[in-house]
Image (cartoon, rainbow, N blue to C red; front, top):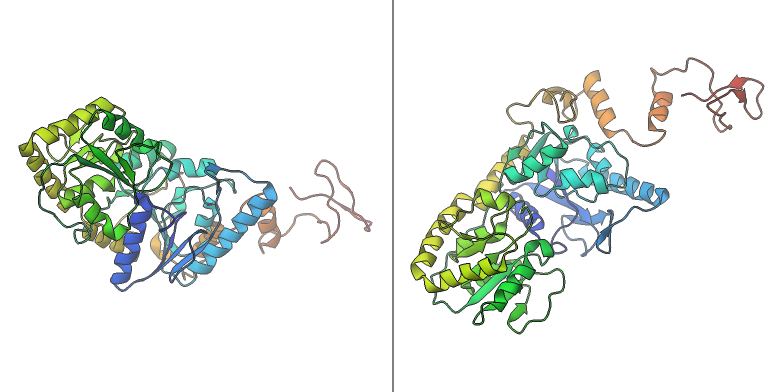
Amino acid sequence: MRALFVTNRYPPDGFGGYERVAASAVGWLRGRGHEVRVLTTAGAPSSAGVARELEWWWRDGAWVRPGWRERRRIVRRDVAAVREHADGCDVVAWWAMGGLPLAVIGAVEARSVGVVHDGWLVYGPEVDAGPRGFDPGRVARWLVNSRAVLERAREAWPGLEAEVLSPGVDAEAFPARPARLWRWRLLCAGRIAPEKGVDVALRALDELPDASLRLAGRGEPVPAHPRVEVRESAPEKMGEVYAAADCVLFPVVWPEPWGLVPLEAMSVGRPVVATGTGGSAEYLRDGVNALLVPPGDAEALAAAVRRLAEDPALRERLVTGGRETAARHSQRAFGGRLESVLVRPWGARWPRTSASGWRRPSPSSCAPGATSRSSTARWRRASAPTGRGAARRRRATSPRAAPSRPSCAAGRERAPRSRPTRSRGSGRRCARTP
């Protein structure tokens, strides 16, 4: 199988779970003998199999809407890049598309699969400064990482059909470690951002005078604190980082799409204190594999840490339950299912209509290389340019769209729509075709 992964960021540029899952999927599929290319935005230098050629609507930490000439240039460049790299591929996988021109999704004739691990199906069309008209029905199959993400997507696209395929943990990268004596070493891993509840962890630390906190990640600046260490580690070293902690905090205050950090901590054998929001609530169980506290409650977070410090039996019970949970969410299971979907994106059956209501074509008539007139027309519509004047240009070039009345000669001035006039240098009357 030859596949193209399109995403807005890719390691080492991105440190979040979305980017890490995409990178692990690339490694898994390549290890299985498949050819996988990655197309993403500019940042780190391009490498073997990773082209960083796309532009997006994110500048200096904010969404932007450039002038129409710049927007047109970006859309055309991204469409051309996607078409070039998708040439010869069997399938295209759309990963984190938030902030990219969504017009690229309709620009390829290869079968495609959407892999959604955040809310870009909702916010992506809102921040897209390119042509409107995004339709999830153009994608053969959708995969989401949690039921919470699917429910949010259905708020914007009622009736969206998607399979819930949750990412897992690589047991070899995060092997189980033996229990250790409690030394009040706390850990927050991942992206450093307000929605991750880092400020809540800092307030809780003030109520734990014997504790120290390590922030293993990158992101926004953190206020100086004598017992806080901010140090990013290479992905292959994160297993050791978890093992060095007595407790892993996951105090997110937003609807977390899934949450890899608790699963990685469970795989290593470290107790977890979390808020259980969004998709993480689908596997976190209070008192079984974690201690759950209300989002934004620093006092409750500190109290949960004290419970762990005072009760070794509780720590042992949570570690046992956590290892069982991590074993149920393995990278092998995720990679194997993803591979089967990419090899055969159409799956066993499909609903009659897409989220937007138009009938989904059958795989036999819509597969690349089909020669029927109906399939050719479908792919032509899917890859046709959009925007002002596109429909008029298609009518003018279509063999079945012969004008019913004379049209202006090429290169001559068009007449206004409201009234006919004599075109420059011609004695006949002609009107602009509506």
